[in-house]
Image (cartoon, rainbow, N blue to C red; front, side):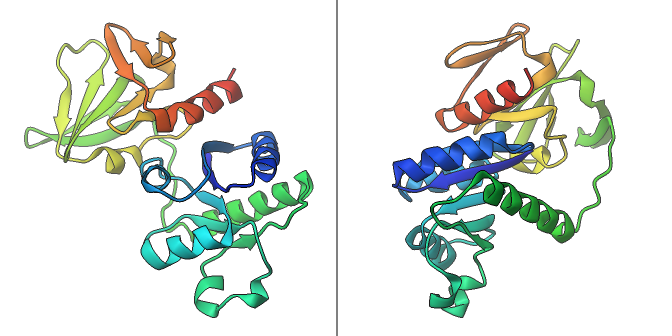
Length: 230
């Protein structure tokens, strides 16, 4: 599932783009922000988003001040009026008024680009190996209830186990090993297995006897994932 973030102060264009993106299979609108600030910057990195849709001024700030950026889509002027340093970092341009067909085509092109650019070979598997207590331990993905990040450590809560397994690996690094269709980050410190969820309330998730908080920046992502899998 690809994650997109919109940073734009034109509410009419934002609503239209959001509606179109929700119609595209495999896309989740992970966050919407009116401007570039600490909250939107945190969302870009913490949600590990794949695409950012924004105005030229915002994208210029991102390009000049950030590294390891997602694909950038400019909701603004033509590429010809931009400097080479800026234009080479912008993946595509989306001019208003834009149609669903244009958005769909853009997403399809972006997906092809991301697949071709990836240096990793995706291997479908139902287990992972983690290092804990000087041993490599095999864990079945179906046994994972949720994961909790503690600085440079990750605690893995498993079915039938009273104590979590602790591994010297941060949560973001561990997240890259998990299938996106089965696991979702719901808080900066928590990733849950969707198949293990018992109930979801306004601010928390219940998995067995455990209660996991839902971070404000992750609420929309969770709601969209639930909607697309209901």
